[in-house]
Length: 435
Figure 1 (spheres, rainbow, N blue to C red):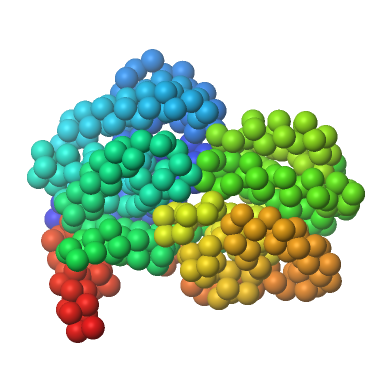
Figure 2 (cartoon, helix red, strand yellow):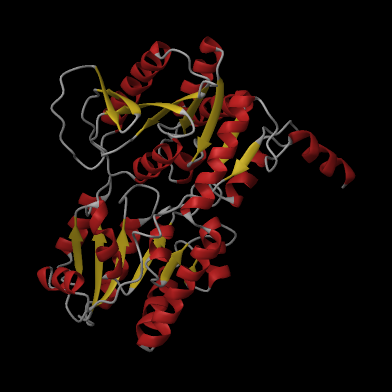
């Protein structure tokens, strides 16, 4: 009997962490454990303030047949650059040690977290362990940090881009989560050999998250508990982070203070949560409410309690990141108010599905008009709009479709065999030459 190939996932966030990538990677490895021997190297859970009591620097355990090596890291204050740097550097150093200790790894799988260094772990591991490397990019950096002017030190961005281009070039396969991100990858290597890459969409569990009426008892109880009964709810559910322009978008709520039936509900945690809470308190915005992350098993109820979902990105994020919350919203069959650049992956999904409306980032008057428009629709029209998203997801964006693509990529890389649907740089250069 042939030995199953071993894949070591170095992915920062993993079950039971609440980060979106944790949930995706937990499901992915769960489905792949029958095909491969899997080790996961990840930080102790703490993305949303989860507590862990371990005092060991490295702690080994199992999730089903998956070996999990947990790294103990310093607590991180997402509002402090120094705290973030301490956390990231500790993770980078310790994850490299944990990876080098793993025996018999055929493929190293890394993701773009922490920025740039996530990919560099795979680059170093491939060099030292003679393993293959699959680099999965969920966010391009330093492009993402540049878009929000995270630092004014341009030399930092230049060095970071050189390192991440090296990560991409040296990887056996690069994975990106959107067609616009594939365009960014090609743009990085203009007039150079573009690395092999494959586009694989993120997903949600479309069997667990389904359209549910607001009259369902659990949803009705949720609405009553939080004073949301009979309200038109504009929801943002997910990471309240730096890349979504939430500090400006929250000001839109001030324009609806005379319409108390319209409520803005923010569910989640993140670097800007305190700031937008402070703004809402200072302005005495009774039409704005905040809730913590909801348990995964409750998402089908919390997502369905909204009338409209905000799916947003900061200006300059097109081709850099894809907000994965879109898949849960579409699965729930809810209308989308996208604040997104034209040509971005999620703008394309909303346009092709007909599941909502899209306004350009920083067009706050446009956002106000869009909310008025969606609020004015007949309930049947609004429901029909949302269900178009569900139908599109069932046809094009199922979990099985994406996971099967991952399986094919990893098997091909592990076996050193050609990948049928992978982008081949030689072919790309021929196309460019013909033009």
